[in-house]
Length: 358
Image (cartoon, rainbow, N blue to C red; front, top):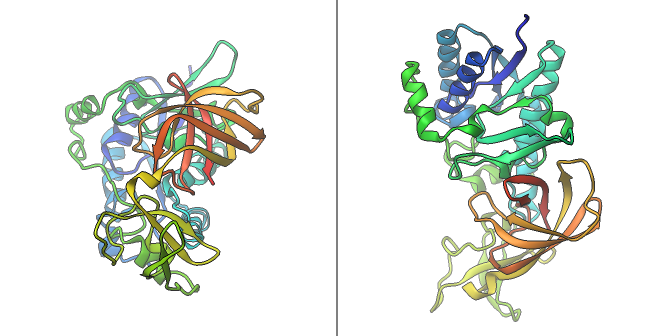
């Protein structure tokens, strides 16, 4: 019987390496691919240590592929990554919002273009080292479910997946805890068994996103006013790209009490400051929805919602406005709801979908 083929995105880290090994053990023919996404003008010395975009990532991934005895390719995604991730990242900050580049990368690069390339090569499935589960229900629908390792669960960044994509995606690590994944890597003699997880924005080597935007845009970064909630001018800010909702440090201005960014007024180039209590709200609006089932929300839904990758699930009611927009009303106040970030909706361990906070 001919083995089913799966293209595994090898990032050079422990997770994707173990995912490839698990799939081989499960009887798949595995083809390893590293997605080359760093810009042509990147500082190669700096980028060499920078997570899944690094030059050393290719070396590590190739060593893993050789150890497993699988075919391995490096594919050029630079142009698409520049257009769909880096340009989006810059434009969001320039428009007073706080983007999530990993969500954009997953949507356009890892689970769209990579899948298209796999299909073109006659490869039925793709796989990554994400901590999430894909399971088909008795109703025939594919479901995205939370990982067994709650601390590593990555479903928040995967809410844009569609039924067509989920039917072709394998995520073996959803059934493992990270400690076990490292144990498997050590047992297989993988050189990346103890490699640290990448935490930074992969295409910004020093994690200074404001510098990156300033150096990579033709738009002038204008100074403007800090104001309080009553409209009183408190001082000058150095440009909207330097601030995000909930920020306290790095304001460049001191008060007799802690003050936080509570709103970014893009139209008037102002940053509104307030106290911690002013950061709390019980509702949000989200647009650009993706509903994983493919069926629009028609009725009020009782759900749990994450408003950022690191936040806890919060109980809420979801009110459909149209096919691409919802209003979310939380049972309890939420702190620092941030335009540009994602609101992702859950029922138990199932991801219903999500949208962009507006």
